Length: 96
Image: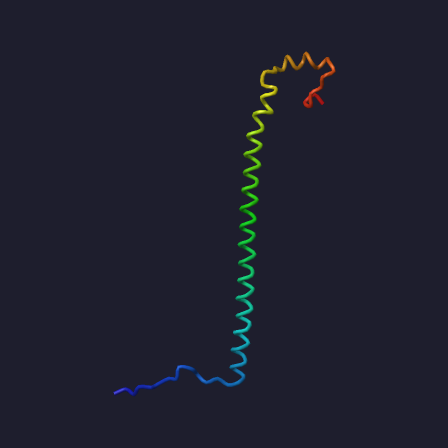
């Protein structure tokens, strides 16, 4: 019959090995903290980008609501009627 060997749950390490392990754990903790900070920055950037896109969409929507009113000023005015005014003192921005 085979003999049962009981392995200890924790190995015994030399002082030098323990120092290396502790150093690696501290370094790992620093990397974890840096990664968490970076993740926070990325989340903030994502929120900022979403806000910028929402603002741009709102500005585009506002301009599209204003544009028909501006265009309606000249809606009844034909090119021929504008030609009549060219000889007068009235100047249009498009005439320049």
